Length: 240
Length: 288
Image (spheres, each protein chain N blue to C red):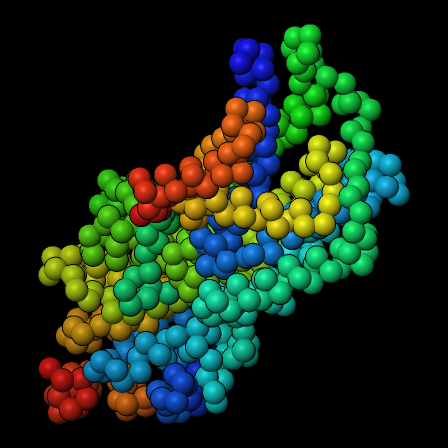
């Protein structure tokens, strides 16, 4: 029997507030190495807050965050990230005053175990569109190009876990397809991913495990097949 | 005006402008990137000068004095950022102005307690104390030439670091989205503390290296902070390039103003600022 892959990130009993508003109500959520997990739910249910809590951008008032087994509940974001996590936030986080090339150069570093699989050349080969725009300022890119840049920049940190919040929001269908294609490739290379998106069918095909959040709680955490054959759960909690 | 007088004034203007640039660049970086209005930046200049004066008095070495002043101001800047300024990033500008104004009072008083209210001076080191004779009555001081070259080298180095290095990219990225920079694994708090310390060190260096050219006196920081804000506003807030050209413009204007229009000289730099703002309200090199 082979041991289960290492747990990369684990949140336990997370309660997070924004001011007086209680957003997460005791969330348990974890990802193992190599695992693709989708996080579904309507807007405002706490998906982004959960991701931001795991990364230390907001502090949980109760509960713990462990990264690779180490307690990181109070750790700075940069320390959590350097344990091999990359984050593509909702809105993409492109820097207005940096060129495409600078975005890639500033992010590049070896991974947690010293791996250097993702180089600027490889990212440009995966996103040929970016190589035509190397000297453009970040904000002069289209939404699709920005998302490609955000993913490419994340890959250059040679992560073991890639977190994609709203992976294809606001993108044209053709661009979406390209993004999904690349996400699929990333999965094949063995990088674990947490994906938030509205395209339930794509997510269920792509993921190893599905989770659904409703009002700050995880209401489903299990395999994708069960969910695919339970339209009532999807209807009630995700709304399709 | 004779050619030699003109040349000497151009040179003096450039030298003054470069000193202004060292001060204004820190001010514009700290404001443009970290969003902090640091009124105490002039006090850093004054402290740099006094620390250098103190070390020169006891050791007799200007090199040691300048190095000591730079190290002291870098350390002081770092501590101030960690203890005070770091808490102000999410506050409004009024809070920042209040606390940095408070710092001016603290530093001015500390200066009076430690060094007294007298005006001091430090001799130019013997190796650089002679002058380069331009004509019978005109001369470039070697020390001024030395200061100009050092400042120019620092200006170029700073531009290269900001534009070409990863560190510079992190700093610029931090200006547009702090949280994303930390999401890439960069310790943004440490980065900002280092930027603040570097700004304080540069200003302290400007103060220290100016000691043999000007006198060391109480309140010297208050005069320089106003002119430095003029430079930052003319150049465009947050723009190093703007600070550079703004500083040279003000350095030259002030120098020529004193020679050609002595009765208007104190007014001239503000007239230039008003003119630039009418033409370009965001400054010469404002970022988009």
